[in-house]
Amino acid sequence: MKDTTLVIMAAGIGSRFGGGIKQLEPVGPGGEIIMDYSIYDALQAGFNKVVFIIRKDLEKDFKEVIGNRIEKIVKAEYAFQELDDLPMGFKRPEERKKPWGTGQAVLSIKGLVNEPFLVINADDYYGKEGIRKIHDYLVNEMDESSQVYDLCMSGFLLANTLSKNGGVTRGVCQIDDDSFLKKVTETYEIQRYGSGISARDESGRPVAVDIGCHVSMNMWGIPASFLDELERGFPEFLAGLKEGDVKSEYLLPRIIDKLVMDGKARVKVLETADKWFGVTYKEDKPAVVESLRKLIAGETYPERLYK
Image 1 (cartoon, rainbow, N blue to C red):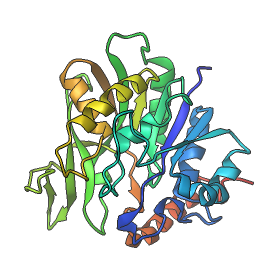
Image 2: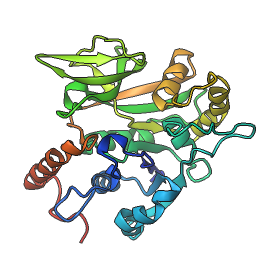
Image 3: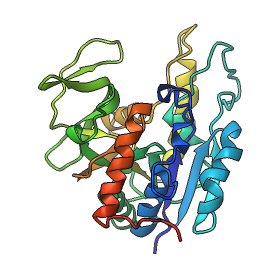
């Protein structure tokens, strides 16, 4: 069987979660966190390695909460996303407190991952279908020798990815008739508003979004060669920042969108009907706990993931 790796981005600071480390919040009946369920689903799908992207200051707590346990059942490694981990010739502005984004996060695994991988967020529950479909694509369909980067993504329906407790950021997708991505637009503060949906672009202007559209949830199937592209692009991103800009991020959806527009990448959109849930806000936790209880009652998961 072809080697495949699950990469989990867990370095986020959790600012909207009230200052806590939202990725480490227990939500399952045995104290499981959301990552436990993603890893369980990935192992069932056939992934045979896990790489956690974390911050060095989280390492001790992270290993105590989940890392040491996971290392007993699958090969697990750690990559570190740090504000000061920049290419030669660049230095972090003193005022910069915000992470450099998902592009830098994934770049941190270079040297650890040499096989196709699935990248996901630590604090999002994605469901079994999307993880299985991406694994099958990585193993059976991905052309790693292609002249253009051959990627895939899980295409969630926007209606299945909203929070009742505030706006969310999603990559709104345009897809062609053959289910390939035409464009992905990072869209902010998406939430239900009466019988409709409100959303804003990166400048804060209102934009129209269709409740039935497909969205990216930072759930991408990626060939290892793509890490070279991220490494080439990061200095270009940094060099293009305007003086005083301490908030812009090197974002995976934007990177992939530009490559698609330039004809340098193709992305197969694998539709999933699974319903997302996550702990974007502290108020989300009770709903996540209840959703998992229902999945356990329906025998999607055992009462205890690990004996």
